[in-house]
Image 1: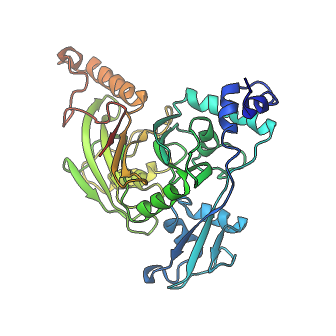
Image 2: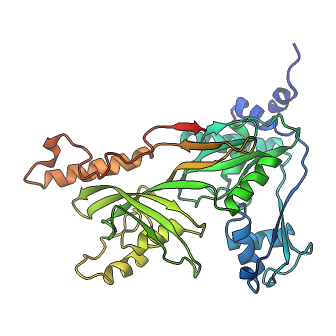
Length: 389
């Protein structure tokens, strides 16, 4: 029986490593590495703005101005086919082009590093929630960048994906999985990933047309001054931003008054949008040191509202992408993928209930309702599933 070439190659990888993970990486190495170029024609509304600002909004794979600046420096983001300075302003009708990165030929040393990195992420929850021959929906653990090359010192989600996804058999297969949007480093949850060029084009168009619906859960300090569900329209970074916010559950908390579980759906794609919108209501997301001062200002502007308690950073940021709905590239059918909240959400709510019950003469713990205060009977996304229409 002939031994696969990638099994032999795995033997040269420096230990320690998981040989099966190394072999999974090597399955992607034979795919031709041809670049994909996305193009965008500047509309009148963007005329006069900086190239990097427009590109950050136009190309989902970039996602931020800093990433656009890095792309200009690498020569893969161009204006009318020419590499220009990152401060250049664009005009109506100009064409921006962004060349997506191709796969990387891995050395034994880099294979060993990626194998160990992948093993670590799998222990933190990295997994494919849904996969077919064109695409995948993967779960990103908190604490890592989404896109390869964001920070040269650290690995990213994309670096580990070849180990958990199967290469596409289609003729337009990508040389490595390509995540089509970003989650902030401290945010966990679902990421839409393309495995073919057709899927990458389809997802880019869907994100640009705002046809992808993403649902997040956030655990926040205090109760927001809204009805059960409202549209928040506070600008982010001077740009219009919209998010639907729904209160799923209010849990008493001895020190913080209460914790609110929010279902948040962004309708625009501004950087840190949900974190800003939660803070603008005076209810910052637990662990969000960046926007805690904004929440303090929002509370100060409301009469009769207590000041925010001290910031809690242990446990990380309590914001997770729990569901995504999109069109499947190969047939246009709708796909909805959901995952439950991470265990830390329920654990913090339970600790809050126990602390409040201990200090409550009515004995909250004795009533048998461990999620007292819930408004709609559940926080949603309680099981892992994929719904195909």
